[in-house]
Length: 380
Ligand SMILES: *[C@@H]1O[C@H](CO)[C@@H](O)[C@H](O)[C@H]1NC(C)=O
Ligand SMILES: *[C@@H]1O[C@H](CO)[C@@H](O)[C@H](O)[C@H]1NC(C)=O
Ligand SMILES: *[C@@H]1O[C@H](CO)[C@@H](O)[C@H](O)[C@H]1NC(C)=O
Ligand SMILES: *[C@@H]1O[C@H](CO)[C@@H](O)[C@H](O)[C@H]1NC(C)=O
Ligand SMILES: *[C@@H]1O[C@H](CO)[C@@H](O)[C@H](O)[C@H]1NC(C)=O
Ligand SMILES: *[C@@H]1O[C@H](CO)[C@@H](O)[C@H](O)[C@H]1NC(C)=O
Image 1 (cartoon, rainbow, N blue to C red):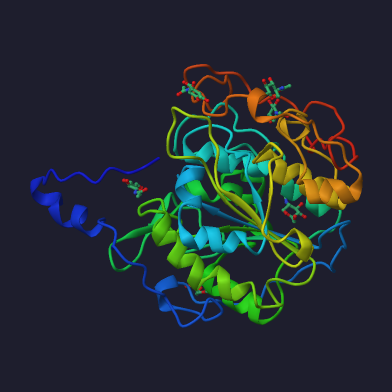
Image 2 (image 1 turned 180 degrees about the vertical axis):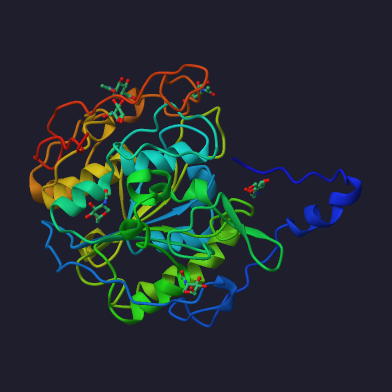
């Protein structure tokens, strides 16, 4: 959700309100994204360790980077986003799955948002599966990097830097919200801060599945797409030239959580980049209908994974990125712009996280997804 900066000055809280006014211009935290920075508070203590690489059918590494709250038209009007599109495949029919932010993040790793219609302190019980279960079953390494999260596996609702600004929020850290990851110390240690990112890239130790959350300024949440574009110029653009990040078989998705305008369908700017994209597809567009569930189905399709038995196996919402589906022979649904489901609905879904329309966590639905494997049922 957009935060409205109130100009109403209330006695004693003037100071703390003032410190939450975002700066107008992006300032680089270090010379390069591969440098550690004191701005990231917790210095790195280790390099991540991974299981041996498991080759995928089309890519060996998937990195998704999430920005915040912009209409497709707003992002594509900005030169940084247009220029990046010349190096990848622009997805012109990619949609968030609801509003506000947090349910979209939850959906991207668990295949459902369980009725959530708020940005709240949420804990999903440990018997609810995520993509992490499916990846680990096949020995595929994973991790997440959260900018300005102070310590690995941090549980807090947000984090305020010594400069008084709250840069990190839990609601944008999807895996920590699932207790099966956040409450498990081994897994929690794979939710890492940006100083660890610098160390892991320099050690050529990145995992095969990676979720990246920039801070509230750099992801456009408290700022705008231009500000986030300056961050992309600092962070992503040089990393695209770094073989430790963008290897020949790396697929990168740059996307937004949701659009900014609830009164139109939830279309967002999404771009596929990276060495896994054949050069003849650079600068092209793909108008296949995708949603955040497509990130699950595409990963399942690439590595032949099991499925979560949720919206990741819903044929309406789980189209696999076409350049991948074309190589694996997977059949997408062929939906066109005229008959897309409304993905701008909020609060209308019953579920355990909807206090106005409660329903218990449903068990997974047995079915076959894009990976061809069975539905995964967690123990208990
Ligand atoms: C590294 O360990 C120190 C000391 O325990 C801690 O303060 C710091 O936050 C840790 N770094 C990370 C990224 O967790
Ligand atoms: C951070 O968390 C505190 C409560 O723990 C809350 O009062 C505050 O509004 C939160 N700030 C942001 C930006 O999320
Ligand atoms: C915690 O995660 C590790 C690594 O995935 C797993 O082996 C272990 O079984 C998990 N522990 C619990 C209690 O689920
Ligand atoms: C969702 O978007 C459609 C247009 O695609 C619009 O007609 C509808 O009113 C929107 N719904 C809400 C709840 O704003
Ligand atoms: C699949 O997605 C469509 C579009 O959102 C929805 O109408 C339908 O109920 C979903 N099916 C299931 C089984 O959840
Ligand atoms: C999760 O576990 C609880 C109790 O431990 C049980 O009541 C519930 O049915 C389980 N949920 C699912 C979806 O398996």
